[in-house]
Length: 373
Image (cartoon, rainbow, N blue to C red; front, top):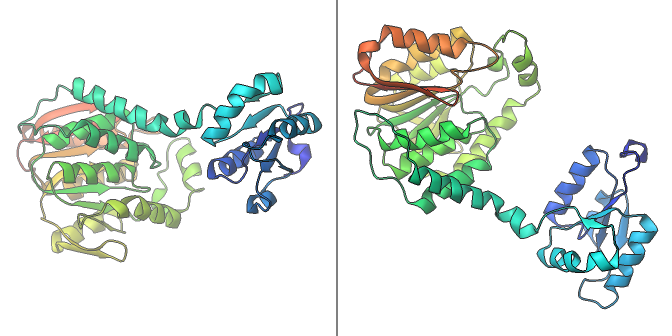
């Protein structure tokens, strides 16, 4: 990056040790934001040096000459702050910097706090959900909730997967899984796999069944013709092939012969599901499905026509007591899922025991199997 792109007047940040993964991530963030950085290392040869626009060599923090060398480097390079993901270095600098270089501060929190914050938050979410379970009416008796540790693990691992599954929806998914019959879980629209991971884990924890994801992973199928074109503009910038690879990376470590996918449009997937029970992919091998859906999660193309087609193609396969989830029922870019969901409710009132909206999703539990269109 050209020095002319740096933030005007901002003093450079020293990143030490510069070769740690968190250091390299932070360096890239700074450079994107125009913040000047200087990398540093105590190694005689550090391969990360070439990645930095400027570089310093410092003694190991355990060596007597470290303090003076750092003090001189701060003065010579007019360093304004220090970033370090090394716990020992951070603790030492946190104690000596006020005397060694007044005015120069650590720009990051304790590395231990930073690394553990996500786990702590996940544990808090789990404890809250267990202490305050959602009052959910259902025609199926609830199974005992999973243990706090298992629930916290679910929250934590889901959090690192990119996606748009909000916290309210996440909590409801945990609750409906406890009140689900045994059968297949089918997700229409999986993309990077955040909600797919949640559903796959819940299926295992509560003995529901196997997960089938149906998504064309195609930029052409992302076009939704939203009113202002804001969604379509962003969709044109993403890489569908990369999205599929990310999905596979996110789900593969947790697969126990209970996850697979069909890379095709939703309506084609419904025809495949009706005609045969097995799905085979290179990543996940062969998975055999029951042919009855316990949970149907619809999160495909949000145009009215597509949402309506998804519901019509799959709802007749949902078993009595099963759930239908219409994601983005409340969606600021259009009303396709809401219109399609409302039409389904109006046409099948006698077949629906439970209907509610939580977060942005519509949740329905069927009392009987709906008549197929």
